[in-house]
Amino acid sequence: MQSKRYAVTGGIGSGKSTVCAILAKKGYPVFSCDEISRELWQDGAYRRALARLFPACTKGGEVEKKALAAYVFADPRRLARLNAYTHPIIMEELLRRMEGHAVSFAEVPLLFEAGFETRFDGVIAVRREEALRLDAAAARDGASREEIRLRMRSQFDPTRYEEKNCLIAENNGTREELERCVDRLLATLGVPAPCGRGA
Ligand code: ADP
Image 1: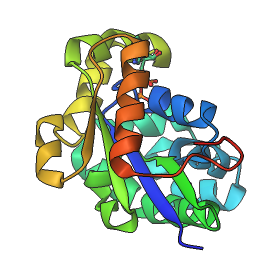
Image 2: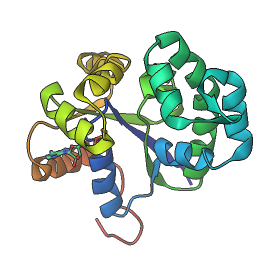
Image 3: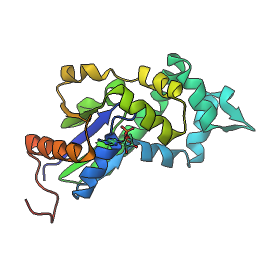
Image 4: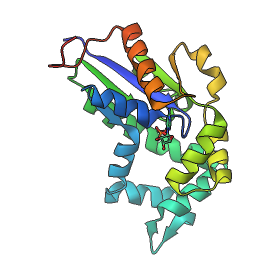
């Protein structure tokens, strides 16, 4: 069986999770790097490795998630060091989970930053105006607009998606419009309907 793996990417607050929820509702298998990352944080060996890499972010020998986030987002070199350790682990686990599905999708926030686009058969990039993203992401993550803006600056520039030969979901309207956009993109990709869901 030939299997097709698609990545869903986009900046913080662009609507990646929303697109993935739409795909999951349609019955497609959908996986998430953030979910894998959260699971890895439960793993002692992973946390110990992070504590060794970032001793400045530990308390009583344990790495602290919030302290680590503040530390790495303050300096791109620190962020690069964190990503160099975590990204390959997360990506291998993601691809393992996608194995064996005829068609599957994965939410991959830092796809282009990590250079992982070649591991997929196609990419859907979700794009939303910055003003719309700021408030929603700040409210969702309990962060300030400034913190969200800082994270945005460290992410791939959405005006460059065209260069990357991906399908773009413009998400500046309602959720219903986004759903219709996802339908159009699925038709463009020519992916079959999920098992048992008919055409
Ligand atoms: P991401 O996963 O890219 O960070 P989300 O899918 O979580 O983004 O969307 C960020 C916030 O914006 C969420 O609260 C989501 O419900 C909201 N949102 C996304 N797209 C729309 C839309 N088209 N209309 C209204 N709210 C939206």
